[in-house]
Image 1: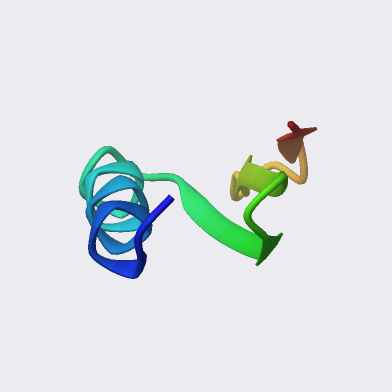
Image 2: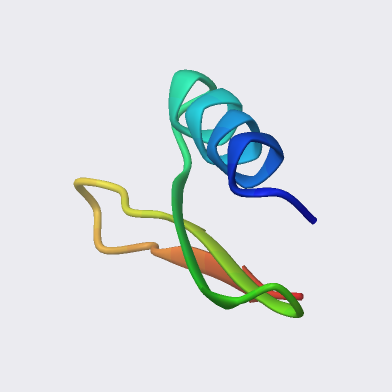
Length: 44
């Protein structure tokens, strides 16, 4: 996966309200936090 493609994925996720971290090309974490403390995340 190229850096440009990874940056596009992260930008789109953030546009949709998700936070995203990519520790490497094979591990991604998407998460959202709510004011009520009902945070949600998924690691792929």
